[in-house]
Image (cartoon, rainbow, N blue to C red):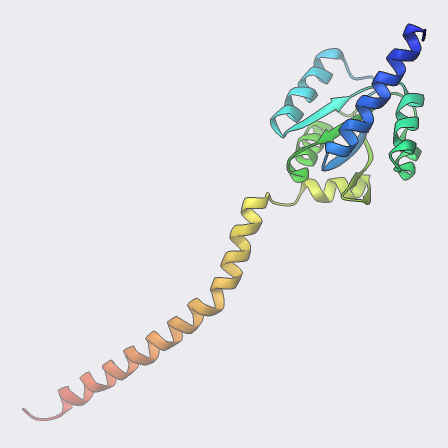
Length: 175
């Protein structure tokens, strides 16, 4: 029969591996010197953006990352660390983290992974400054619509000039 501590560690490790598979992006933060109400506020801000903060022992986290073939993330695991699993839009989760980071100096953004791409602190900040998916879609539609609108405007002006010219000719000719 296994010891209770071993079962608990295996359960935590399995939970981390499961969340790593389900998450679209993962961010690693250091939360030392943050109070419990601050961490609760961070969890609530992340919950709005469909992300979860998960804290476990570093040895368990490292082992789960290695078994999930994410060895490059283990360099960020040092001291009190937390994993943020974003299941929805990664921009929303990074914005929530970045906004909380700006308000609380003790929170540190270490790094993360976004669709097999390693993110550093600067990458997370750049990701947080991007507009949301809906805004980007609207900008793309406007960019695609712009040449067509310009072409229609030019055709309309040509037609207006022709009508204006005919009106001037009509006004100059005697009745």
